[in-house]
Image: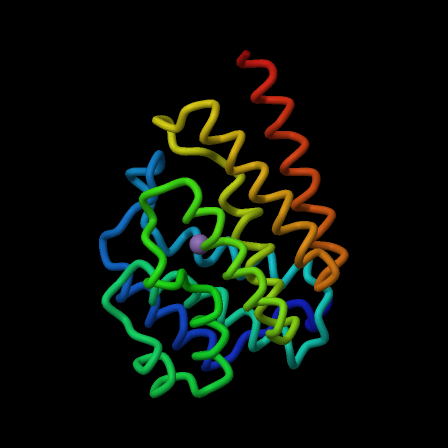
Length: 192
Ligand SMILES: [Mn+2]
């Protein structure tokens, strides 16, 4: 791998430390012994290795990737991100966070929430869009054990929508997302 694919500097290290502290002892469902930050690093790695973005955008995208769940899942606010990392990163993280005005309870509002999130992301620069693709790729690597087949199926349909709506942001991540979806559908059919 060339140096181009390994952007490493102070702001990324700052983002890694900031996100590690913010997520604290959170874990992901189904991965109870793995600190949450592993998911954030996985998303950043997907972006760095497979997005194909030019190096300047890659740096911004990798910082957004490391921070992408801090506003949604921790006490960190968009304003905290703005103070520490500036407007560009803050707007990116904000666009990747769920709109709190839409309740998560019903299936209809979940679909509406995703549609709203995707239409907002489509107005954002490529460096924010690729993080959404990378996030879903990471999320498809394993599902929480308690999820029903129907829930996994719905999640895969959502992933296909994300691929369709944002796929033009990165050929590499689009292809990886489509193959994850296809693999998961095969797994699901084998469990039938
Ligand atoms: Mn995430």
